[in-house]
Image (cartoon, rainbow over all chains, first blue to last red; front, side, top):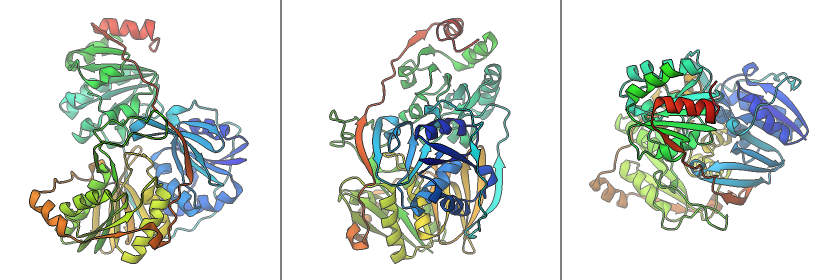
Length: 276
Length: 250
C-alpha cells in the first residue's frame, strides 16, 4: 500500500494522519510545486497514479476542484470529506449537512479521498518523502486572469485553535470589524462568519462557516449574533467548546452551545474583549 | 449559444433529515423535496444569459426517480426551454451521474454546462469536475460571476483565501456557488406554461451508462448529539467558565 498525499496548506498535516491510517508508505506531492489550473494538474496527478494505491488530499478549495477530475479520469468514485478511516477501504463521511454519517466501502481498486481536516489530529510532515512533479503539458482549456487574495494576519480559519464568528446581527461591515477584530486579536483567533453575514458583505466569502463553506472544529468557537441554521451548525458543531452570544434566547445556536449568553452583542463583545 | 443545466431533486434545505432506525439510510417518506439550491442558482444563471441574448436555448437535465419531473418542471417554469429526465430509481453516485451527463452532452453539444457546486444531500461536490474530465473540457468550480464573450467564459471563483478569475474556452463546465445570483420564484403563468414545454424521458441504459454504485453504504448513523450547556448571567461568569471549567483560555 502506497499513498500519494497532496500537500496544500496547513491542513495537510491533518490529512497525513488519515493517509497514514491507510497503512503503508506515504509520499507527498506539494501542490505549490505544480501547475495550478485544474486541467494540467489533474493530468499530472493521473500520470503519477499508477504507482499509488490511494490519493489523499485535505478538502481545500484546490483539492476539491481537482481531485474529482482526477477520480473521473481514473474511473474511480471519490470519497469526499472523510472523517474516519475505518480500514483501507472503509470510510466514514458526513452527508445531509452532517445530520447523517455514512460508512462506505469503496469497491474501486485505487482510492481517491478528500479528508475533512478538522476530524483528524495533525501529524508532523517531517520525514515524509516529497516527490518532484513530473513535467506536464497545459491542454490550454483555461487560463488565469487574476487572483485577489485577502491578506490577513489572523490565523487560518481551517486550522485555528480559536474562532470568533459573526452573524447578520452586527448590522454593518464597519461594526463587524470594529467589534470582532479586537476580540479575535486578543484571543489570537481566526474570524469566521455566517452565510447571512457574508451575503450582507460584512465578511469575505472564504470566511463563511457552514455545510458548503469552511468546516471548522477549533478548541473554542465563539458565535456572536448567529442564530444557528442547520447549515451553519454543520460547519462548527464539532468544535470542542462552543460559546453563543445572541439577543434571542430561543436561537437554535444555544442548543449546541456549552455556554450561552443572552444579550446585546454591542455591549457584550467590547466587555468580553476587555475582560479577556 | 446552447446551455445544458443539470438539476437534482433533494430533501428540502430547511428540512432536518432523520436516520432510519435500521441504519440503512435516511427517512425519505413524507419529506418535502425541492430542487438542490445550488442547481436553482445554475438554472437562474442560464435564464439570465438567455435574457441577455447570449444563450439561445436552455436544456435542463435530471437523473433520478420519475418524481424528478417536478424538479425539471420547476426549471422549465424558471425559463429553461426543454427538459430531459433520465429515470433511475435507487442510489446513484457522482461518477455515474457525470457519465450520464457526458453522454447527453455528446448528443446535445452544448456550449456551456452549468451545475450546482454540490448537492445538499450527499455533499460530494464532484459531479461538475468529473463531467469536465469525461468530456475533456475546461472547468471552473465555485463560480460567483460568469461572463461570456468571444467563445470564452470568464469566471470568478470563490477559493480559500480570496477570489480567482479564470478564462475558459467554450464548451466548458462551470459549477456555481451561493453568491452568483438569487434565483427567481417561478410565476404562476410560467408554472402553467412549463407544463406544456417538452420533457423527454429516457433511461441510463439508452446511453449505455452503468449507474451501479462503486461505494457500498454499510450503515448510516445519526451524529453524536451535542447537549446544550448552560446559560451564563454575565461576561465575567463566561470568562470564568472558559478559564476555570472549560480550560480553553489561559
